[in-house]
Image 1 (cartoon, helix red, strand yellow):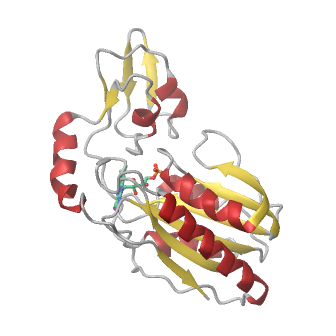
Image 2 (image 1 turned 135 degrees about the vertical axis):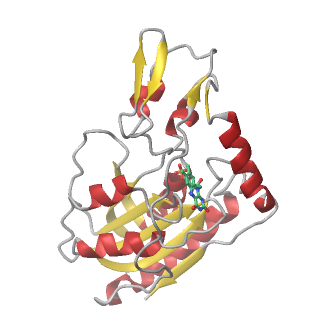
Length: 254
Ligand SMILES: Cc1cc2nc3c(=O)[nH]c(=O)nc-3n(C[C@H](O)[C@H](O)[C@H](O)COP(=O)(O)O)c2cc1C
């Protein structure tokens, strides 16, 4: 086992964290978590023997805030394992983008994965994933990576993706708050980009700052925070065909 792993993740609705954590727990005695979604918090350099990065896929890319936070890190030749986590549709250029960002900071990437989680905008797609089977598979992958870590060479893994990357997705509309909203402020607290403010009697969301990560909808204690219904319908239409698809996780090693 690796004695200590630094686990860097952004996981607005929990799927990315679950997949990355399964790997970290299987490969390491101790795991130090670095939540990249916490506003204003400086990201600390790794102090363990391995760094694990996990990012969700948004429009075939990784969220810009993940790239920005990675830029603050000093890899110093440390070994890293990277994951993108996506909602069954496709991960396109996201894993390549993550690996290039991580390598650029001086990490050596020993292995990568593209794993499935429930789609945060269409929860019927990949419902309940990562599930027990995923976790047990990711655990097996961790054991395989562990046995190869010492022989890891400098070149890094080859993963799918194109450059220039796909254009970053545009945000059609931010989530809205229903009348049942109790103004508890949890959405404001959890928003990674400070797009939400609780103003006298109502919730205001800045459409230019919102990245549509869905953290606010997931944290709402009474389901009062939702996607605007026309957007929700559009997403379900677009992704509906994937409801019965069980996409498999993919793993890449040296
Ligand atoms: C704005 C947005 C864009 C997304 N784009 C994609 C995509 O391009 N391909 C895909 O398969 N899933 C996509 N998803 C689904 C997420 O990648 C998936 O639900 C992921 O697990 C979210 O991570 P989290 O559970 O850690 O929040 C998207 C979700 C959101 C909110």
